[in-house]
Length: 423
Image (cartoon, rainbow, N blue to C red; front, top):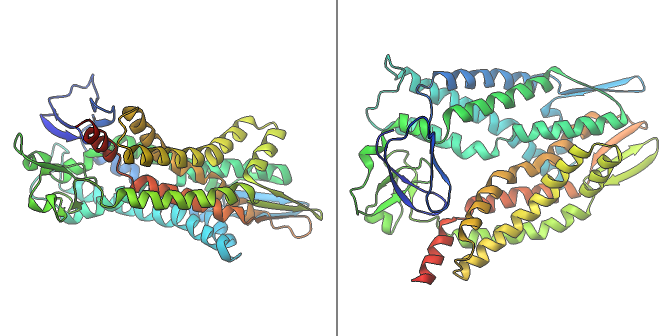
């Protein structure tokens, strides 16, 4: 890596980085500790191969059964789409949960994989003998495709779905005989390949292949602006100081800070608080077995797993479904209040917490996916039936609202406010 201009998207600190050796491997922000850059191997052929493999596994995971369930001579099997159809059929808020499952487990992953394969294929076709893409002019069409992939990434939740399937497997094992289908194994392999794709690409590798960031670097001391889509640091024109301009590399709108960040985050956080109480008080699952009906809240499901001796899964559900949503709401409240008060206390720790809640928030959907799986599979009439409870819609709402709230919040505002108070 030659000298590069890097800006931290978490605190706004600008860095002028010299060459990085393979022994170092990454660069960290000197002010807040965020990772700015990670060393990657040359070439995009390997990530393209991983993406093509993931596309094949995705088809298998959706076309073949995840589980096969048997009870008293009756059998049923279900795919990912079976859970979607089952939830949508209930109507009301539960049907909205079905739409959420369809988007996060089928539509968004399919679109992300398709666009990733096309984008990486275009880049590798433009590569020379060295395997490195030739850098000519900005490829705005390709940049728009990759920007879409990065925006969709948090909402592609097959990794979360896999954990939900593990919890569903244990639940199903308590009421019937269950076997993992071809789709279940394909889903596990798909999640592993997706991790390999992320590790081989990182954030900056494809963007730097699309266009060289060095030619847009501002001169020393000149105003600059960071693109939150492609991490390009470019010279700030008059538009960037008033009306939003456009990133010269990816075409995204540029602004010194996210417009309306505090107002949007406040509204979404308040809505999350409103739904958090019914999400934990109302049942998310109702099991009718041999004429006896039992309803389970999220905490009741945790107790059920503990009673079955499944402590690791009980801890997983407790953390992901109860502690994490509460932590996100409390953390967002702290960020907003501290920013309003222009507080400089624990600024670095607040920024680290923001990164943590941004990463962990999507994992709260484990219970949503678990419900979609068991509801589709266990419909054995008078023997055993599992139905979704009213709490699942409220819980899904908390997850979605807090994810939007975290993405709307601009952590650089905390540093701006603290600097304004000291000034």
